[in-house]
Length: 217
Ligand code: ADP
Image 1 (cartoon, rainbow, N blue to C red):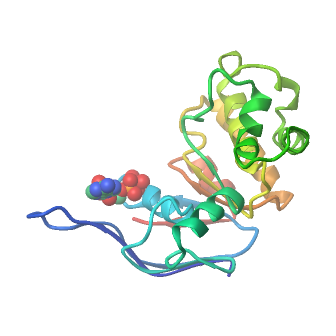
Image 2 (image 1 turned 90 degrees about the vertical axis):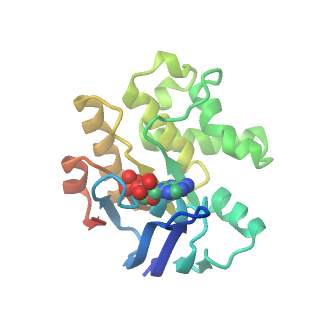
Image 3 (image 1 turned 180 degrees about the vertical axis):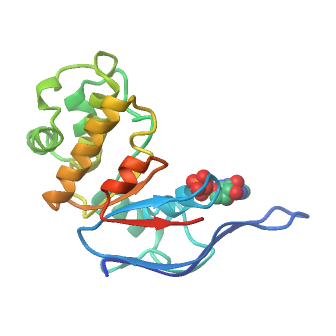
């Protein structure tokens, strides 16, 4: 298994209140190259799980392995490196910077890592080709459709060739047509084995397209 969760809990406690268990005793595995839809009713811990897999958060107890990395014991420096190198994250609301072009948005993670402009540009061009947004590279986000904004955000998440792509409701803010386009893109990325895909979704279409469904309710 590429990803292994063993008895993972994420609990929040406030003084004088009963603890809230955002994730309770999660144990499951995901194979390399899989396309997995994470489903379940609101509040069941889907975002919490995604944050843990992205090393944006730490489990209260339990073990999380992604490849050869043990996320539950990693130092802060190693977690930062993991976020930069091993994982890409896509959000429902795209989170593009409005004053940067498509190319500049996609290249930003590499530039923040100190890569040369030439290297950042060539990796960005490859990622934009992969997600079908290369023809809009000089446009600004406000000049794009929702689907094009999400293609840009997915290119940005893939620009450093991560082994794992995490997406939180990637079609949740799109109309039917754009949602279908982004779903086709996810299927294409899976067929090309670009990365292991884990997608939190409420959409039956997205869940049906995934290779497997992990229902957390
Ligand atoms: P989902 O993504 O499935 O809607 P979440 O992972 O966002 O669920 O949240 C799971 C549960 O944990 C919810 O009941 C939520 O209110 C709770 N929760 C999430 N974050 C916090 C926090 N920082 N403090 C307290 N409770 C939280």
